Image 1 (cartoon, rainbow, N blue to C red):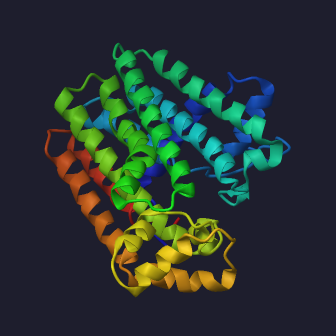
Image 2 (image 1 turned 120 degrees about the vertical axis):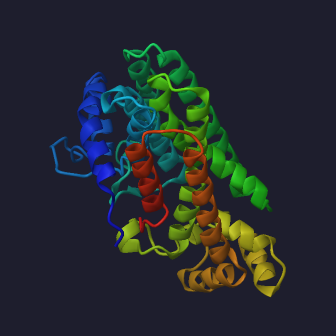
Length: 337
């Protein structure tokens, strides 16, 4: 099992009090739902010990402030804001995908219904901008524009992802563009928003944004690999879960674009409308593998990671923070869940 770097644990510890203060502003009903979603309590509202999510985006935000020469505290409003936006997207994403489990627990919509999940997500999105604009930084408006733009791109990617479900064919270029929006945009903002809040120059902000954007696509590639070949006990998802829903993920889309018998059989299988049987899923996973989808995704993950590291090493930043950003990126592309 890959061990998470100390940076993630430190980021989570630094952000959680501020995140709890932000959530405390919500009305009683919404606060209870959000606290459950964040892993702070059970369905009945009883507090529980839980690590919650990975705290990846908040950790990036804090490190970006430090990389630009600022303090950890200066990056916290941005860290809280990106985490709130991320969880807004998860609440809505679970509903759209009809996923009944997240992090080994029932999803909000499956417990409280669709309307509650939508409203809770909307509340988090509004709260994110409130927290950010209330920060003491004179650069908060600029950070707010960055976050709003990233959210718009995230939604664009989600719209594409939804459209792909009914599309007969999806190009690899289109699939990468979708991932760049749905996953890469918020990761890009997370890796730069702290630097914006401390007044970093445009070259540093751009380099950190590129680092996050490339890392975001690499993150999605790993997610797609785990969605087919991941260990259910670690990922919390059923085996071959993405294939069971005939999802046009990056390795699948790559494999479908190739020539050969495996690709042709895969295209024919993906075009069917009836629910697949569990017995056929291992064979379909083999088709993706033999058509090159798995190996391409592994190699593309490595390439994107190199591009991310090249970007952050191209400008002057605080060495310790830069080193921790690179370590965090390498953890994300070697994770098992």
